[in-house]
Image 1 (cartoon, helix red, strand yellow):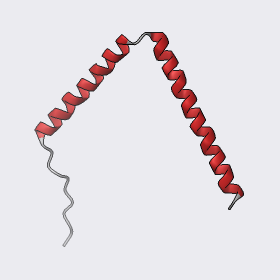
Image 2 (cartoon, rainbow, N blue to C red; image 1 turned 180 degrees about the vertical axis):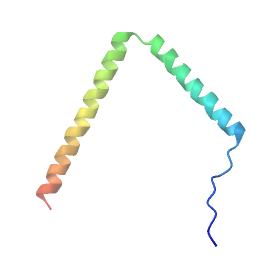
Image 3 (tube, rainbow, N blue to C red; image 1 turned 90 degrees about the vertical axis):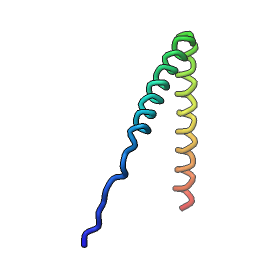
Length: 70
C-alpha cells in the first residue's frame, strides 16, 4: 500500500500573521533608513564589506593550512 505524503494543513491565521510581520519588518526598515544619514549608511556598507573580506582572507588561510597538512 503506497504511503500518503501530504503537506501539513496551513493555518490561515498563521499565514495572515506572517504577512503582517513581514510588512512590519519592511516598514521598520524604511523607518531605519530614513533616520540614518546617507553618509553613515555608506560607511556601514563599506565596513560590512571590509569585515566580509577579512573573513574571506581567514577562510583562505585556513584552507591553505589544511591543504599543506593533509
